[in-house]
Length: 133
Image (cartoon, rainbow, N blue to C red; front, side):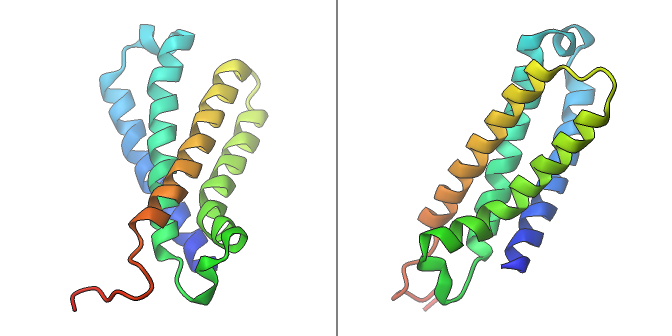
């Protein structure tokens, strides 16, 4: 389960770093100063990064316990949710946090994590099939 969490956190960090670079080089200051722009840029990148992190973590979850719904959810969603909690703590330490934009992007990220978990479950090979065989 720890491997799944690490895979999820690493995928989230890589995706978030790439997304931040895209936002810095593409979005205008006017877009990032409006609520709609924050939701568009940061919300969509948060959704996609959480989706990717949870899907990769779900695909990394192996063993006899992945068919158990609760254990699979904890393994797949642990990394992305831990990253979101760390992000929330860092945002709370900022003196002037825009809580409306932060909450919307966090909800979008959580929705992306759940969608990624379901995508990872759908992409898994069935128990009776073998890859490459």
